[in-house]
Amino acid sequence: MKKVLLRLRSYYENEATSTEKSVLQVILQNPREASIMDIRRLSAAGHCSPSTVLRICRKNGFSGYRELRDSLLQEIGFRQSAVSNLKPPKAATMSRQLLLQTVKALEQTYELFDRTVMERVANLLNKSSMIHLYGLGASYLVMEDLQMKLVRIGRYCSLVHDLHLQMVDASNAKAGEVAIVASYSGQTQEMIALAKRLKERGCIVVAITQYAHNELAAQADYCLHVPVTEKKLRTSASSSHITMLYIVEMLYQLLLEKDYDQDMDRIIETGVLLEKKKIESDMEEDLSAE
Image (cartoon, rainbow, N blue to C red):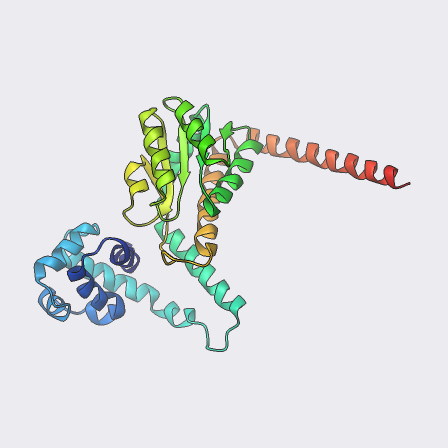
């Protein structure tokens, strides 16, 4: 099933012209009513021409208005029983609202999940002699999580916090190595510059970014998408952070499948070593306290 409303919402927020936005509002605000309109009625309701509607269809991966309308009808039927339960009551606490927001963001991320692309990326990571990780702010923390996972299963990777050192690392990357660049907006200029440099070096660039046209996605060989869940001006990055961590976890699980027995041996071995180190540290503290 093509995720019609999710696609159109991303297109509306990031690419649509003012004329296109007029008819997109009709669809997004009243999807059930729009789904039974023919193209002339819809274009009239959106104060645009039928050609504008067709252009929106094709830009979003539909062959024409019939396919978009059929997909919309199918999606509405699929969501009908669940939609009424997503809106929290007026007296809902902030924790409840955050829970619903998080669940919705994860569900949308799952809907965007492309198994074929994820498998290809996992295969590339499995074969790469070095994996380069890049991110800023909350995206850097996501890359830290991925670094910890990769190191535990014996994959060599690089991640540095300082932006200048990230550029140095990119400049020293070798052709054929895999680089993962994380940026929710896809418009962070530093990450775009890194992606361009990595391409010049002959690296395979994987972007973790929102499901919308952006400069980082345009530079990448592969894109792992998260949904558009936050405004451009945001007080925190909770939803995007969680969805990016979900992408990282799915990628890690696919990577584990490549050499499961050996990787599990490594995880157990490192776990035993860390536990032994913790016991030794506790004993030293007890002795020093006596």
